[in-house]
Amino acid sequence: MMTEMHVKAKSLNNRIQDKANTAALKKEGARICNLQAELLYRRREFSQAIDVCKQALQYHETDLKANLLLSKIYKEENKWTLVLQPCQTVIQVDPHNDEANSILADFYYIKSEADNASTGYTALLNKNSQHWHALSRVVELFCRNGEQLSAEKYLDKAKEVNPRCVTESGYNVCRGRFEWYTGDQNQALRYYSRTKDSCPIWREKALYYMIDICLNPDHEIIIDANSVENPETTVIEEASEQQKLALHYLDLLGKLPITDRYLLAQNFIRMHTTDKSSIQAALEEFNKMAFNADRTQIVNVGAVFGVARGHMLLKQLQKAKTVLKMVIGRIWNFDDSDYLEKCWLLLAEIYVNQNKTDQAVPYLDLVLKYNCNCLKAFEAYGFMREREQKYVEAYKMYEKAFGATKERNPMFGYKLAFTYLKARRLFPCIETCQKVLDLNPQYPKIKKEIMDKAIALIRT
Image (cartoon, rainbow, N blue to C red; front, side, top):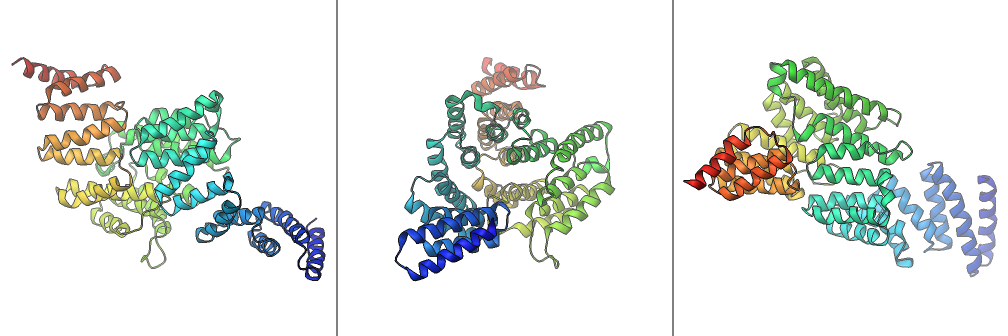
């Protein structure tokens, strides 16, 4: 079939050479080239497909199919500098072309132009509330910008338009990511677990998110340097259970092609233990992935975090700091955003533990610049201010953290109530205690050590 198309295209090209002004023949030439390019694209023979698309554009410069296919190929090849021109050509001819507008929004997203990306994605959602790719990006962008309520409105709208969308994998990943951003990891897991193998793109995303939650339940690190040095039975058992569950999800991913993301997950799971030999083995693998041959350039930010985390677990603090400092000055982008954030938080944590608050602050500010609702950054800031007995500044941070979780996280509620008590804000303290007890009536210490004391102070 390809040979037959090639012969037709060549024959038509000769006729066009003879009749250069025949517009109909040029359009027919473009149509035949597009059919050929589409077949090559499906076979993932991208280089040949690009050549054929360019041939089609010689016949018809503004041909929609050829320009759109070029945009898709350049996007898949991660050649974003080449995406823009053919994509904009499509939009100039057909301003309402959803596929081109989606690619253009992705272009802005990759280039970290959040406002332009948000405008593009919300326009797509206003036309089709079940455009899952656009919705996933909106959740990411809005939650990072502190606009959870706006993100939730788009989730609710999709459900309102089609109540059955709750069975679709795309919706469940979007909803799960929203729950993760607002601090409810158990609910996030429930949504991710509803994804189906019949939707491999969304299923893959969900499995990676589930692995991350297994290794960082409630945003807490179970394994640290002390638990490696002096392992306790309860920690060993808890880590082992989390590791087994994460390995189960990793096995499900094993059916897909092996990628760097898979190797990262594999080694973070291997590192989730108190066994020093396993940690060292994972550390060596991360080292292979993280840098170029002479270790002068970062190749994979996730692997850099893995190297630093391994050194921390083995109590090699200076080595961890040296590695983490390599990401300072790295240009922020959405692809690396989660791991850049983790690197900055780990560096801040090191300085906080060394009582070097002034050196921790710039890294926490950097985290909050790109994710203004980062719970771990709020917590670190609150802890620093508590330790300095600056309780007003501390409770302001815990207010942000508790608010970001839609007041559903009892740990942040407890910290907020405690700092309210210390700052003598007694009525808000009691109100917050009650909210925590409504979430968990058995939450330890809060009634006796905070609520009852606040009530007693009011009475005196």
